[in-house]
Length: 414
Image (cartoon, rainbow, N blue to C red; front, top):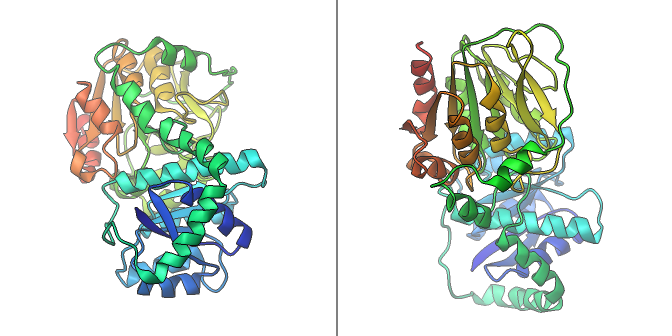
């Protein structure tokens, strides 16, 4: 059983989060804090397996807490609770650089439905984190110390009162996904089909995703090659390593899907643009893709790559329903390239839970020449998406994270 510290300045949110966590037999909240300073003191004294950390706190913010612990080389496994406000999203992206493993968006309204969705996402994040390679074992599993037993007894009674909630939240283990992580059940269902062609259900869901015609603005440039990248769990950290290694004069555009909620991809793009020589931006509907620019699909939208009459590629953002519980979905992006005029498409799949991207690449292979680079297992936070690509016989090259940029440049002839 994993022992957890919950840090939130709202007594109501602390109670909600504790009830959600304690309804799952794999986790137990053994302590709570209402401000960053108190949380810091408790973390220094007590080895928690996980810390569920609100970003906006009195005395010391969540970002300041992680920065301080990082400077002191204090290992913690943090899952952040963040709002979609720009300032909070910016802090969340910086917190990922200090070692936070995942984040969940705090519900704006406190209705029963939003609490249930939040609960599913929180438990899924906690389970994904404990299975990731980045998870740092902190304490021994097993017995409970005397000084925490009374707290656990109290929470156990709360969990018993939450029998109805427990039933609903159990669905989180059975494949209910969210915007920034895929699920184990989805992974199994996709991997089980890897020996065949793209599934009919996935094709139909992608093709019927409700897109509207987009009229591109400005003028475009046709390139012979194109780079399309997909990542999920561990992706923000991986992108902070990978993107700064790309040359500023990259001869083609690079588009990417990072599973992430609406409101966070703009902050991710801004941060990557600050630390990279290559330009990075959040993609906009109708804009032409230019060489030497990295385009990040906005959270909560699908991206399709379209072409005008001169075969210049541009972005079409699709607000259709999630595909395989994902929005954005990499399979949508890859399948949209099937009708393109590119001589070759370089597909890159980095760390991530599940198998998003593999079916889209398999479909794309039927129509276009591709070169597929998948991230090597030991350098992945979660070896799910690259594993599905590699085991499906789709990878042309398996590269450690720090070699991926160089592999792309070599393939482009640079």
